[in-house]
Image 1: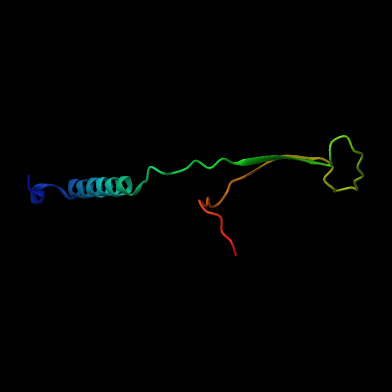
Image 2 (image 1 turned 90 degrees about the vertical axis):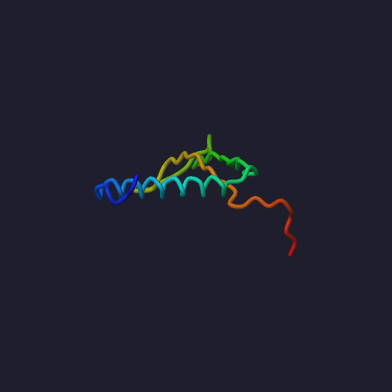
Length: 82
């Protein structure tokens, strides 16, 4: 099949399909099997502390309750000493 006989829309679609296939092949080859799942640390925030009296003025936040989740940005296999 010669590309000269196809309309320009079909040529563009073929080019897009080839680029997508190449991108998929390159990204699949770049992945590793040693990816480690990072476990998040979750903390609950209660302000003011539970079962303690608190004072507030007009416009102040009286009660705050939140779930705070943090992830390690970098996992090191060896400890760094400075």
